[in-house]
Length: 342
Image (cartoon, rainbow, N blue to C red):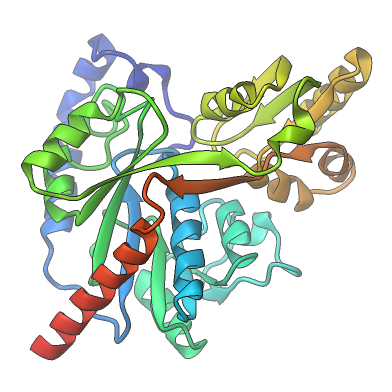
């Protein structure tokens, strides 16, 4: 999958999408077969998968972090399982948040590892088995819904309320990873993050399928320190505009904003430009946690930018605070049912 989504993916379906529709049909057929595949490895602990409909960010990692926090509060030792997009790890590896870097293991695993045991693995079975050896009694997958490697006890689909699923077409004609109806069929619940009507079609589809629908919002933890300050905001995430909107909603004045492709490692020229613009116009630099850990894996002026840029820290808060615990309880109940049946 590409990290930089073409703009037409997020517009009404047009000529570009139509020209790619034959490839999308083939891709969708393959994705459907993978979703329907029944040969999956069952783990001896509950497995929760946090996925999304589309390529790009929708709030998966904040959702996984919220579930992990709830699991710890309930007495579990959760283990995060991530593919580690952008990293260079070939075999299942436990992430060390002190010694590892985003270049080695990926940016999202670094954020997860700061909260709980985290394993990066392209092979999800190997990764899950390593988590078990490390003592995890609950596995939370950050992405992997469309894979067919593990048995899920709870499969969650996260969708951004503003962006929705773009033009609704399957890759490469659009951002959708597999036919939407098939994804909903295999999901246990829908999580809608943020405000807006972009996710309304998914909400209606999930409701018709009798799937639970949970609402959540991103809450900045430290936004007050940036209020009424003139800032240069930069982000290399799935949807930089969501980050900018969060800042503006918190009262931050954005004199400049710079968006880059998801998981992007900043070039020397880009870093130089950000630092120069900040100094020239007296702007405070502000970025996301993902971007910050990526900068820390660099050297020279990348570390200088990491030192000068403030980080907007966020939490995912569900409209009903009992939802994370309820999801974990549902996963445990499903695990017990399949364990008894076997």
